[in-house]
Length: 190
Image (cartoon, rainbow, N blue to C red):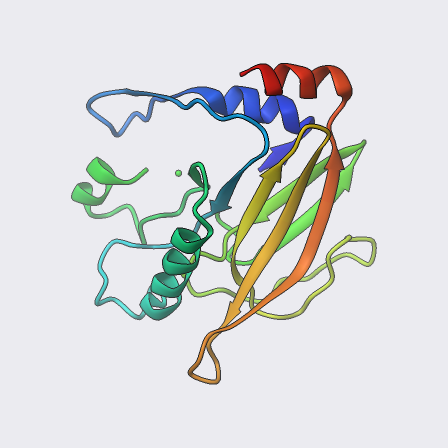
């Protein structure tokens, strides 16, 4: 997810239209949110067959969904890779477009970029450049919780580890992004 200006992203999400070529109908999505509010971003869930443990980790997926429900976000944004492969046409009639099965945060030219692909598809370690703001060689099953306030956006990566058999939640990365004053006034008006 690209966050050039957090307020602009929020405004765009306020009046988004989902127009997938795989869908037979379109859906206009709107919501009436006043700041402060929060939303969740995550993807790479591979939720096509809950019995398929080769393609994804259903236990992780279920724990993430429960944690997201408990966070009570205003909305949830799926970054994609919801199905395991594109061979089953029925998957595409329901699910459509995130692909790195881990978490990344980069900054370039004053823009903060996030990759949120820890939704339960089998995650893998990735090579990180020495100047990447987030350094971790771990598998990061996660979701992002974004809190929108008048003058800033706070993005927190909520990571789950089930290697011990019990969910262990951590927040290994968090960043605050300032919202320009003119953009925050527009967001507050919606």
